[in-house]
Amino acid sequence: MPRQLNPEDMKTFFQKVLDQYKLEVEKAPANVKAKLKLYSNMPVKIELLFDKDYQYCSALISKNNKSEFSVESFQDVFMVVAVSNSKKFEYGSKGNFLYLFQTTARRFDDWDVQKFTQDLVNYELVEKPR
Image (tube, rainbow, N blue to C red):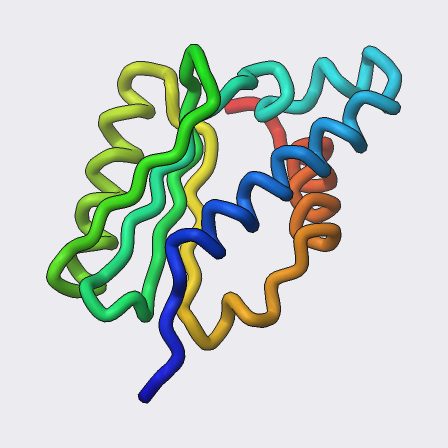
């Protein structure tokens, strides 16, 4: 049987990323914190969208008034991509969209909380405002 993504593992991963992110950013000077979009918009909502076989996942991070996770499952990968892009557009039009991450069961095994968090912080520091 091929590898599958576990919604609880994905929730745990992103919760650890948020916790690690807060720890790292708390030590940063104010001028650095001001550049960090995720930090300035916490708490956030994380939506995990899976295909029915749990081979593919999109994780949407958006502004919210409290930290929360939601999990949805769709018939296939194409529906996951379509719904995540639709939500990205919808949230973007409201000014609430922050990030969209996508992975497969095979690739998720390589994701590391520390590296992911550091990459996210570095990305935010060099991202040019739109």
